[in-house]
Length: 114
Length: 115
Image 1: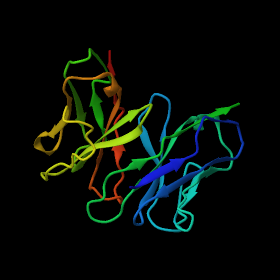
Image 2: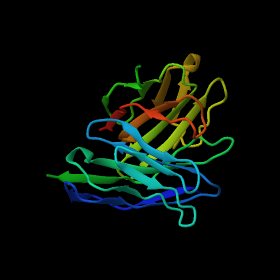
Image 3: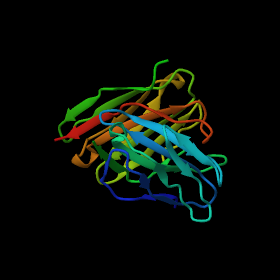
């Protein structure tokens, strides 16, 4: 079945460091791909998404590119801030009729230290 | 506007008791989803409602779990005869429509602890 695999955490970085969180997926078709973020004490929020191959989602300095050839959607940010400390979830949602269920990765906890 | 709200925010119950968790979706959103977030299993889909259509219950882990959505708005997730493995954060989400074009907005969750 459909699945999402993302790098295990926790990840600890110094402020202004470069961030990459790897995410790969398995799916029968061409799903839409998402990154959600969960800040401490808050609910899940959509960070960015991409709905077709080669699309780049971006928001708040974060980017991820939908790579069909490698079935990947890696999250990157050039310079992290303390306020980026959160748990990040990669997710997919099938396209087409009847496609509504999000399948999530296990989450990667990021801690950014000053 | 108001986001998705859930109540209670925390619930502690004894093993074997029944619990009800409530979700108020964003007004006008026709699609409503329940997910469960637990340490061992991560985030799992439980059930989905779309308008007046029959719900998709394929993610419910056992027949102790049920959910309803009244008037196409508020939803209640009921867990009967709770077990310790039911301890988790239960998340509700809503979206304007069911396909991936429309973002799923999540509520803050209900943390359920079964003692």
